[in-house]
Length: 464
Image (cartoon, rainbow, N blue to C red; front, side, top):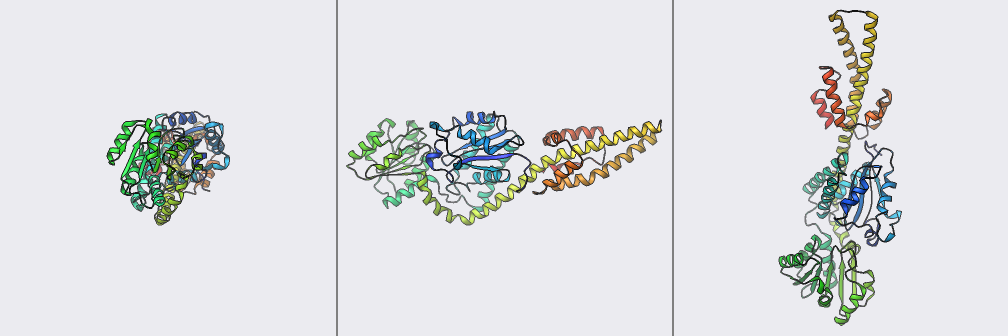
């Protein structure tokens, strides 16, 4: 595995590793996310962090202090967020480090790790998580660079592969499932419970699929009215849900309620009023809106977000070729960002090496002056010139190797060898590029024109 200059980790659970009943124990709404992110950032081990919480994943990405075990630290933190006191098992979590962590970030941003490959919602959710973390001061260095770069990677993939064309969202999959159940949605009465983005998408797909009677209800009634008007549907007050449910053949639940909105007790009354005509409930919320035991009632068929996986798998087959090209782009971009991070690591090595050689040169020149006694200005200038030239020649080889290795994904052993060979101070080597640049500027002022220093073109190469 390629050595990474930063101790970056991603730990979380997703639809690939944990069922919905496990994921919902960690689900965070947008109001809670900033505070929880701030709590993680306050940990002694964490330098920067990002928290992402969607219906299909809850994960933490962080840069930790050197030597800290991100797998243990981040998993412990996430398990501590569990609702009801029952934390997900260790087997439900994935733990990624270094290159794997960055590759995962790019794949998530590009929707390659989504239940529905090509769906655009995850990028928006990631940008929201970024803004909240930035607002709380949890992003301010290399991790911020990685996250913002992921947005550009996602754009490149969508542009070059067309993977987002005719993307199948979870909402679309829910409507497809309803069509398979009924065969035809004409004449069916459909209720959208909730008024968020998922609800709006569901209503759009329902209308395109022939549904003529669409109803919308939401705790904030104005939002329900807005969505219903766009799709020529009808809204009703949230308080009237129990009274209106018996009219509905299909219910798509997608509200942000943290509890069950449709319970077994409620549905018993609904089915009595419907004379036990079949009712299909599709729950695409996390946490779930529909109590799981509802499915035990006769003629009530309940599907949750995990049930949509079969619909999604068909979508994955259609997109396999585009996804292969997208994965190639991810690998290219991971190599590029590694070079960029290595450049940050290489610059302090170069500065420290130059400083160390210059210090040795000055010490030897002072010894020589004490032995020689008074010398003429011309002689003193000659001593300075020849020793500077010697130092520059000594520095040229290792500095060239540092730059070459910084531009190569597998160049870490060379950088480590140069550190050991010249006994460079590890604490200084770990300094940021900004600190290194300041040191370079000061050194240039002390020794203008030294050939051991970087030219502007060389500095630009390191920065790239």
